[in-house]
Image (cartoon, rainbow, N blue to C red; front, top):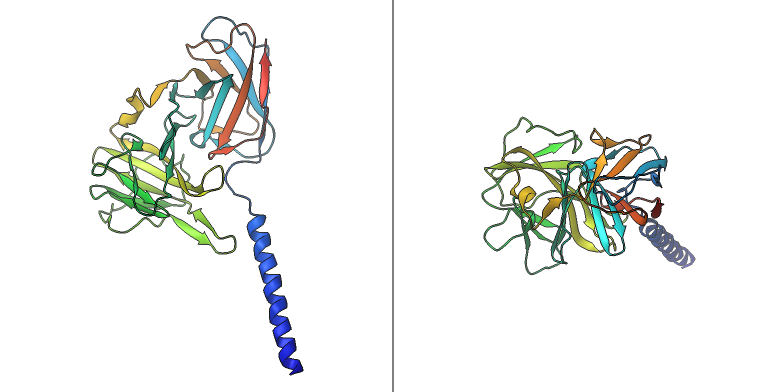
Length: 306
C-alpha cells in the first residue's frame, strides 16, 4: 500500500513538473523572425526645402550583426497621418483598406509581402499571384484555410531547399510537378511550444506566363493570432508581374533608399531621399518605422530635420 501511494505521488509530481516545464516553453517562446539589430536615424545636415528631391536623413545600425535582405525589409517615414514607404526601385505599394488579403511591396521594389487571413474553417481565402490580391471563386492561384494551402489546377510547381530567397535568381534544374491535388507541405508543428513553424524552403510556381518564387515565413500576425499566413513572393522568370503596373496597388515611391546591393549590412549607413515628392519643407519631425521579416526593428522612433 505504501509503495502504491509513493508511485501515485511520484506520478503527480512528474505531471506537475512536466506541466510547469511545458508552460515555461510556451510562455517564454520567442520568434526567430526579425533581427536583434537596432537602428539610429541621423540628421546629417540634410538640406530640406520646398523642393521634391531633398536628401532627408541617414539610417545606420548602432548594434547587432545581422545582414538584412532588402526583400524582407521595409522602411516607412510618417508625418502626422501621412505615411511614406521608401524603396530602392522607386515603386511602393498603396495603402489598402482592411481585408482578408493585405499586400505590401518591400524595400527592394520587387518582392511582395502578403498576409492572408485563413481563419475560416468553412471556406478558403483565394489569392491571385498575377494581381497580388484576393481573387474570386474560379480565377485564383492559391487557396488558404487554417494550415491548408492548395495550388490551383492550372499551375505547376517545384520545391527548392537549402537556398536563400535572394540568392535564388534563376529557375533551378528540376522537373515541375502538375499534382495540385494535395496541400502544400510548408510547415512543421513544434510540439514543445505548440506552434506552427514554416519550413526553410522555396516554392517555384509556374502559371504559364510568369514563374514566381514563394517563401512562407509566418503563421501568426502581429497580435500573435494563428491562421494569419505571411509569405514572400517575387518574379523569377517570364513575363513581368501585372501587379507591378497596377495603379490601384503600386505607385511611385515618395522616397528612395540609396544603396547598391541586395543587403543592408550592419556596418552600412543608408541615405533616404525624396523622390519627386516634397515630404519635409524647411523643417519637420518624421517618425521612422523599419521592419524585417514583417517584424518591427527597434530603433529611433522619430527625428527632427532642420
